[in-house]
Length: 222
Length: 304
Image (cartoon, rainbow over all chains, first blue to last red; front, side):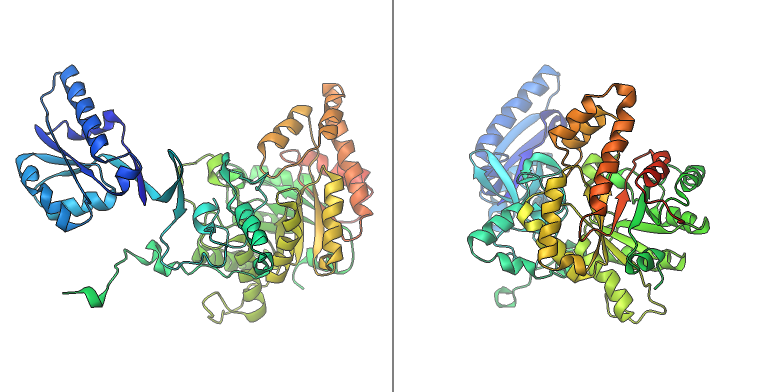
């Protein structure tokens, strides 16, 4: 999933303050799963903002709605009516959702209420970890299913560096050393010898480095 | 052979390298002073590349100052701050300035540095860098396969940390760096001699010490506080309790001498260790002690 975390209340308040009527628009998919922008978070944020503005003697009317996915037009449509009724939209989706709304609602300012963080998983309740950088050329087969480009702080293809200590990364004691994980897993799979092979430089042209990317599926173009 | 360091190693001399950290500014006086302190004592001087991710004068420029002063630099280069385009260009530039040795490194993560808000690069890794420099030297081509008009022919160094985890994998990684093109290795500071001996034995057992020159790293401790700090805070550092205790047990004013003493004992062991071809003295901001260490360790000869 795409993970994100809600921006601090004060920052959100500053963003929406110039408007008289705002719509807080939640997204029921990824950001819901990571507790940043689903229906529940929309309700809590709306209450917090109402209280905040009341305390600060500001008049900002707050409307609420959550749609299934802000990254798909089919669902965005459901927000059209409320978008028209409000001066601005505070999106609690990821950056893709925010931009999809901005494309769809040309006249409405769309503001981000969430900091999009990464493509990851919920490792244990309440703990989300980054797993994939979306580089466009997956090499996980070589690394026992653990991505060094994402999970090694130095993106080492031929790791580990000299900072690996008791399974942890040199950047902090809470971060696992991806290369320790790779070595452990390859050992378990009986494939440790595979790591002796030199891995040449990554071809980054399929990543964001190659410019903004587009995925084209000819068979689905109407 | 372009590099004097290489010539000496090939001639089976036990070499001594030291370190020179460039200044945090454009003032060359600091470099001149360090050159004066090191000149005649060592065979080559590593010039660090924004070490600990603190912004300093570039290692290329500082290395060029060394060349101008008649000293041989080992230009350190990290992959943290440059992509492959900048790296290759800098290597050509460095070579054109008379720099003949390079040490290929990943680089400390910027999280510890003066500007943790910087974007890091890590386009290629340190092993890729080794491979690239060798490819330039051996084929005369850059990474794209383009025939260079005078390819840089660097003597290629790499780092090894025998004290990092997982220990069993360390020699395999060393083998990978050698296969990629490393000609010499400079190790992390050695305080845990038992572990170092085990590592070099493993390297010997698979024939690596015949393929590469290994320079054991040493850093004289100046105080017990420094020992404790390095052990806890410096990534990949292993200072056993008995070494820390030794530093603690002497009066404060005698601590530097005790540190030098430990360093001399380490060098003595390294001199007699099969597969070790020299020492790399990293006297961090204590360059004035290097001459003394070289003298007292019996490694003094006509150098420079």
